[in-house]
Length: 475
Length: 102
Image 1 (cartoon, each protein chain N blue to C red):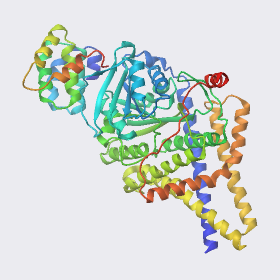
Image 2: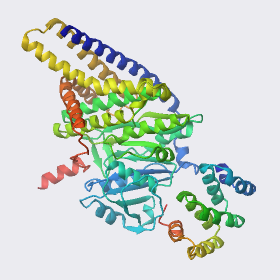
Image 3: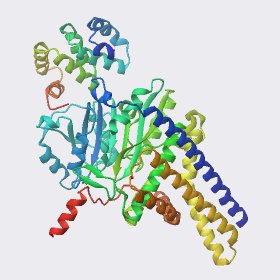
Image 4: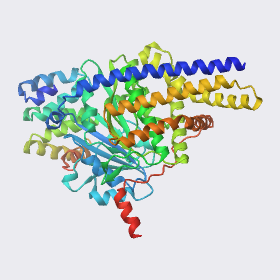
């Protein structure tokens, strides 16, 4: 039995690493194609053109009073000529709405709309008295969660394209230009969604909602997540987009065809993984209606978000992600190995089921089994050490590969010491894997117990580091 | 249809008006939007019909916008529509005429 289990783990690991290798190769090909294609693009022509498509940026906000004013300011100053910003106050219990109303001189307007996607009651739609903030619309509604808020924003929106973001993220000024490009270029298929790279803003210098200096996170946990995000975005999603098997556009920022979102039913309020669930549902809708479509991904860094810097917050986030993954996979289990859904059904879905959901559980069982063998004195130490060395070397190589991709493409961490620190963190990261597996197991248990909801996220806000230092000095 | 509006091809207006009832939703919307880009008093009756017969919010708003773009004639027509007891067009017209709404 032990022999079988040990070999199962070994071969599973080989298959997993083989798939990572293949994804890495596809990612490299896709990156090279993207960089070549976009090296001479003149984005200014899009900004100057009166024919550029109108876009609505929808940002749900719940108790975001620390950062909301800065974030709205960043959104309103994005480099694009034809867009509006809809902030959805999701029944905040702090003074988020009052702060926005005061800062932007909001008044209630008679806004005619239809509840094309069901959502909680919209108490009012507000516009600014100041024409300088003409692009800003604020919705005040009863609390319903992030998905419900996004649906409310979609109902109010008048544009063909929508961008859904987290209100606490910092958006790169040219992100809209880069996101909209696939929608304009693709002629044979209908582009229904585009995503980009999400970066980590911890320890960066921020002034009035804009990043002044990009720094590598000082704390170990956020640095670990830098590696995680770099691998996920530059190796994983780039490859899946290339293979037409992309299942997830990050909820932090994504652009969608509004009509397709509405026809697919909007965001689901029944899951905490609403971002993944929507993409799956949209893809299913298009496949079932036999429409030629594409979900694309661009490797440009578009958005910066704060990640948990302590274990407790990270646990909450990761267990929520696991629950969201399970809920999404279960809702769309019909796609599993179903050729009707193309590579998504034959490759993407099985991969996520096996290697994103099941692999951490199998790894956890492997760890328990190793402990058991050690206690009973049955551990084949040479085999164990060899396997450990193999897994460790591969993991570090893969992460270094991802760091290399980042350095040769967008090179956001300019200082050599930051790159060296990243590599150093990559060497320590495999020892943190048991914690990841614990989060995955806990997420599964929570899903089995029927746990719902997001929990509370601790935000430190985007106050400038320099201001913080000055305040500390005067206190 | 979108290009016709962008290029101000007013000779296409009658053709688009005839095509309207045979088109799917997206094309109908583009027809009304294009009419808004090429304001013509002769389309007033058609646009009022769109406002009256269509249930879709987007179509109704674009029809009202197209009427508004006709200038003084359009605005007078909308004021009359607002006073209508047949249906409550108040909200739609006030929405479109509100300069604060983008």
